[in-house]
Each structure stands twice: as C-alpha cells, then as structure tokens.
Length: 120
Ligand SMILES: [Zn+2]
View 1 (cartoon, rainbow, N blue to C red):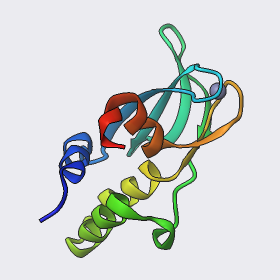
View 2: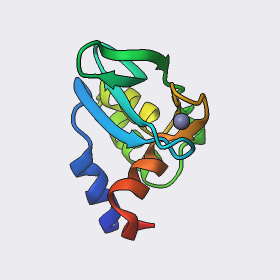
View 3: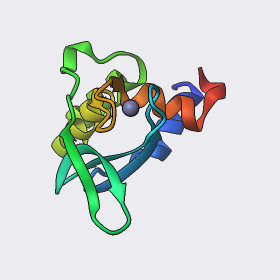
View 4: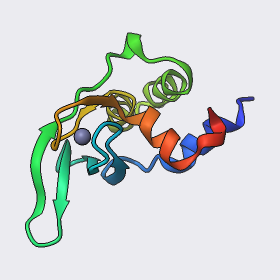
C-alpha cells in the first residue's frame, strides 16, 4: 500500500491526452498555463483572445532522476505499457520555464504548493 499523497496524484493525473495545469510562477506570480498533451508539452501565458502566448517547451525529468511518488507512478506506467502516461509523468515532474520572467521551476513542486500545501 502507498501513502495518501499518491492517491492525490492519481486524482490529479489524467491520461495526458488533454491536460492543462494553471500555476502561479513562484518568482513573478504570473499565471502560467502548463499543457501536457498530444498537442504539445509547454508553458504559456494564456490570453483570452490570443490563446496560449509565448510558449516554452517543458524539460522532462530523466527517469533516473525521478524520485518519490513521481518515480513510483512512472514505474507503474512503464510496467503497464502506458508510454504516453510515463512520458506525461516525466514532464509533470520535470521543469518548466516561466514565459514571463524565464525562471525555471519544478511543476510538481509548485502544483503541490498551490493546491495541496498540507501534503508537504
Ligand atoms: Zn515568472
């Protein structure tokens, strides 16, 4: 059995074919849209009229650098032959660049801090 935090992540995770996450940048507080899906894996500033502006590619974490719940989920996805899911996980637990201030942060860390602070 696993800890409750893995349940949290299981709920957060979709199947990565159409997933978006909204996070405040930890440095400049810009609202950053993170896309992990078939159409791309990137950060952007979402504009109501213009769509996703100023896209930056995500930087997936190499499998051997994953740890904790990220590693656990990645291994399960690989075991189950869920290639897309495994790839989505390595992006979710990888790094993103803020399109506004160009600082780099770990998506999963910021997501946890923004959405579920008690899990820390
Ligand atoms: Zn920023």
